[in-house]
Amino acid sequence: EAQVTQNPRYLITVTGKKLTVTCSQNMNHEYMSWYRQDPGLGLRQIYYSMNVEVTDKGDVPEGYKVSRKEKRNFPLILESPSPNQTSLYFCASSATGLSNQPQHFGDGTRLSIL
Amino acid sequence: ILNVEQSPQSLHVQEGDSTNFTCSFPSSNFYALHWYRWETAKSPEALFVMTLNGDEKKKGRISATLNTKEGYSYLYIKGSQPEDSATYLCAFPSPHNAGNMLTFGGGTRLMVKP
Image (cartoon, rainbow over all chains, first blue to last red; front, side, top):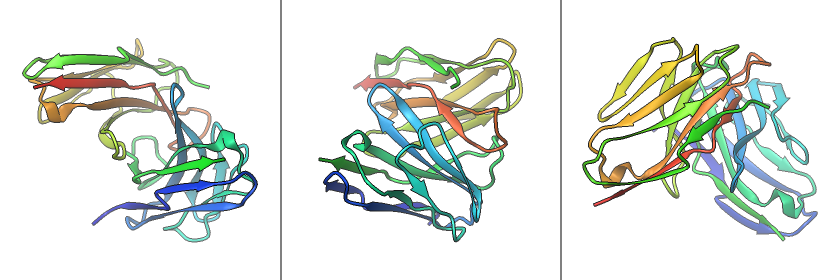
């Protein structure tokens, strides 16, 4: 089954404790991205990757890192999480980085930073 | 940051009613317009990607139209059913890069009463 898989689905942690949210897709997609969803602010893009070893900042990259060492994986790293990073996070992928490609979303990761 | 607006924010209809809502976006530098359906506790799911002025797309009882010159798209649902209850999102690819970086509208939350 074609899918985007995120882990963990839920995490409660404390300020400053490094964490990684993994994202993996099995569709051989070139393009992957991370979004965060906050009430009243909608879905906002954090980082995206056009292909292996190519990443770039989205609208709200502060406090996040990403890497794209393999085509299928695009982990989101919070080196020193803070409470303002409490949010619902989605990973998404599309076949290419062209704007006419629909994006396929993972099931989301709900992070709470205390 | 792009201005992508959706109206209304929420809509309550009776089962069997037909309904429509609007997405407005910048009319300059148009690449594509995406529509997604997002059910509670699930991930957003692509409905349509529209690229041409005057485009009309249909999927079952849901259809969408596009006017790139005036910067709006309508989503129509014919004969609404309770399972249509969801948030409907439109998204506009950012013109300042070649990637599929989407700016999302705030969504229209549709609730269909049996």
